[in-house]
Length: 286
Ligand SMILES: NC(=O)c1ccc[n+]([C@@H]2O[C@H](COP(=O)([O-])OP(=O)(O)OC[C@H]3O[C@@H](n4cnc5c(N)ncnc54)[C@H](O)[C@@H]3O)[C@@H](O)[C@H]2O)c1
Image (cartoon, rainbow, N blue to C red; front, side, top):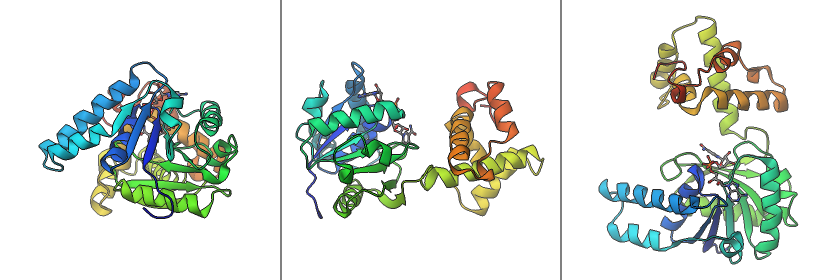
């Protein structure tokens, strides 16, 4: 495989994203160690991987033998040291907190071979700030996966100024081995996907506010006119209005552009507890 031979992958954090990353790495033929600091979480992650592989077999996407060999390549570890000490690549998918991630990367820097690449799945934090917590910023890179990881094709490779060409090439190789379509994006707030996605979402909300059309019709405009599989307002309901509000506030603060100023309707709905699907009411009634 390309410029660096990545065979052993450690995934740190086994939640929504971590278990999906372990899944695609094992299916790509890599040895995977899965670690989570919360007792039982890695075991739960492994059960979800088993379920998802099972569904793949039921749908004829993979054979029973493929499922078994993928599962056989994943081991759950109860210490980060055991998970990371021999890794060629570590992919971090713990909570979205800069403090937690910088502490974790400083520890990974001590625990892993000096040649290992350390990747973060952060969806919004500065990759260069995370890299600065290590003594190998040239080997720290963003690998931003999408949920559900084993289904979604996109992988945003986030590069900051200190990343080496070899690390970037290795991340691209890994992305392709995982069956993903990589894009390379500079380490700026919102990367490419959130910046554009949030922009469309916020504009759709302003259009509801200004009575341009109903939520259903605005969504249909994008679904049928631009072939988006789902309109921006329905997507906002699924993601959660509170989640979208905090991303909008962050991007507005960081990028300073008016297009990211959170619309009044969004702030009001969040204050009223209308958070989308999870609360039963958003731009739609669920
Ligand atoms: N959920 C999404 O749609 C999505 C999409 C792209 C990126 N992300 C990013 O992926 C990361 C993980 O998100 P998630 O949705 O999987 O979260 P999650 O809450 O489902 O999982 C996080 C896991 O990390 C574990 N954890 C917390 N601190 C840890 C530590 N110090 N060491 C080891 N494990 C630790 C937790 O026990 C938990 O199981 C975040 O940075 C998030 O922004 C999420």
